[in-house]
Amino acid sequence: MINSGKLAGRTLFITGASRGIGKEIALKAARDGANIVVAAKTAEPHPKLPGTIYSAAEEIEKAGGRAHPCIVDVRDEVQVRTAIQEAVAKFGGIDIVVNNASAISLTNTPNTDMKRYDLMHNINTRGTFLVSKECLPYLKKSNHAHILNISPPLSMLPKWFGPHVAYTMAKYGMSMCVLGMAEEFKNDGIAVNALWPRTAILTAAIEMLTGSESAQWSRKPEIMADAAYAILSREPKQFTGQFFVDDEVLEAAGIKDLKRYACVPENADNLMVDFFVEAKGATTETLAATAGASTPTAGSDSGKIPQLFQKIESLLSTEIVSKTQAVFQFNISGAEQGTWYLDLKNGSGSCGSGTPPATPDATLTMNSTNFFDMFSGKLKAAPAYMTGKLKISGDFQKALKLEKLMKALKSKL
Image (cartoon, rainbow, N blue to C red; front, side, top):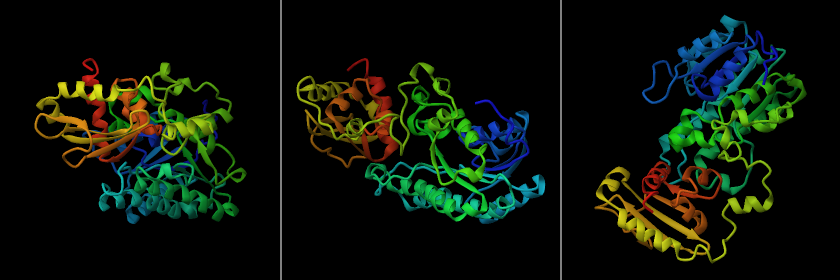
């Protein structure tokens, strides 16, 4: 999307702007000559995650904007208020708030400790509410006032809650702020909207969740930046309370070819769908299938899973056990319905039919066709999970260790 100059001179207060989507939105606005308040926690380089508020500020100014880096933990009222006061003193006001800061833990109820629960809710929901509340007096003075939350459309389908209810509630809290504040502030001329990606976006967070190969099925953060720019360039009084999805925003703006946003253009039609949204053009039948509602017919799959486990058993070793350190249970539906286990935590490893001899670290539920495809390398665990073909309970990170294991065993299976 070509910059129009509509954000020139506007001041944007962006949380979590030191890296990822937040930084890309900042850089897009900076090319208009906007003022950017980089409100994030990272002042010192992180050992695993690139970018600080200062390196982001430097990039913003090179792109043509003015930047003010602020150390801000959105849970801390004093830090938030101080950053806002500094922003107003430096730039004269605040026109746009982008609530991007977020915390994620894809764990089920038993495996979500309360410290992690509190972190997600305090950053996602409370932080969004706090920043919006404290910026409100200055937004009311602006003639181009926007609040944009990087949060999903609200949907009460159980499938969005079951695998990680704590995380879903925390993200939906951000979206509920959109719903409520849009109604509350509509007479003040403040647009309050949400933006969410259709597919996985290649950020440090998604790499940590799904591994180094995540670029294969992800889009670049630029798609979210361009979509945010299109929303923030609109007249705020013309729309509010909307839940936008990035590709729909761009298509409405006349951008039909989205291949340029794919990290790997050849995979542009085979991307991993993000949480809380359906695949583009999904029908009732395909939604039922991806939710695991369909049952494959017997035939081509018959007998494959026992043979697969026999082969896996012959390849187990103390080396694989030491690298994996996890016990898996597989609940299989469909033509080869049954329960299987893979113990890669004890001794030299074991596997077989039935429940594992030790408490499973992760339980994976899927139909037999998808199960065999996953172990034969045709289907990757992360995209299978993201598209609903695989359900995971327990330790999500250990479940995704299967990806590396399957890659190592693929040539031998």
